[in-house]
Image 1: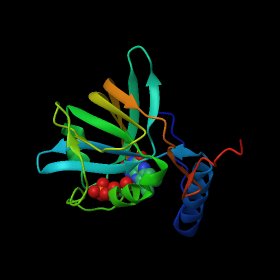
Image 2: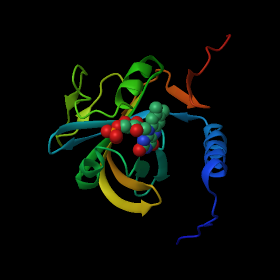
Image 3: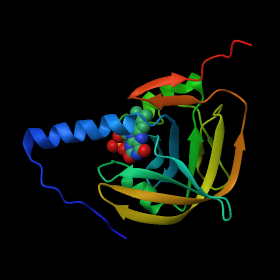
Length: 173
Ligand SMILES: Cc1cc2nc3c(=O)[nH]c(=O)nc-3n(C[C@H](O)[C@H](O)[C@H](O)COP(=O)(O)O)c2cc1C
């Protein structure tokens, strides 16, 4: 189903409209993940806050990848990928994996799962998924994964809102 409004804005109007859309979307606070897979040239990681749960039975999750991503083909080809949900202490990892750089795993600790997927340590949750569906959608692809294994801990997650990192405040109890 494709219900698009092809309104024709140009130049400054288009830039202003895009900025306003980004600002409106930025009001939706999210967690922050690094999505990893094993590419033909080595491990790939990309910071993503488009992660969402989709279904419990079967257990499905999704995330969106920009078509301009340098590692797009690795994710389109991957049979398995992992969603690593970052802790409040892992802001630097988020910044690291938001870099456009094919050697992004240099200097980063990771383990490799039995499916060959890079897994980041000390995250608040991790979902290892088999690619279930890929949808071509505007300037992104929606990648849906079936969760095969997952784990979590009780540490605080990293949050992202209005284009800034934040964290859940300590309670005053
Ligand atoms: C907090 C945050 C969330 C992001 N979420 C996404 C996302 O959901 N999908 C995406 O394609 N890029 C997202 N990005 C941008 C990518 O991380 C970035 O463009 C990418 O790592 C650049 O490298 P590449 O060109 O090699 O993919 C996000 C960046 C940040 C800082």
